[in-house]
Image (tube, rainbow, N blue to C red; front, side):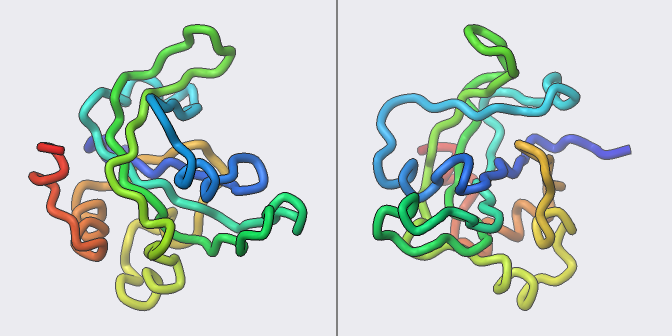
Length: 154
């Protein structure tokens, strides 16, 4: 049985959710659709990374920008537990703490420097989110050059 440590990957398929445009243009509070089975496990104050998968967008959809490579593009704080207000699917509130749009931590790099990381981080999954074990999340923070205590004060 998996232990939910309060660390998450928010999964983004750029052809469905253009992560690069979101990170360039974001304003105000944000939300992220989540999977129903995990609804009880989300809580304000938890941390997450935005993990981008394969970018299948057509040239016109890219709007002159390069395709995103699979990797980690942002560090976020979850600002609310799962809610259904005004939506058919549950969602959580999120706040971007750091954007790595200009220097993402690519999956290819992770496979080289940390091949023993939690497998869904390296291979991806078809889900809107997935939990990450505490130790693996802290390794990601180290690779990103971030300090968890400082992030929690942000």
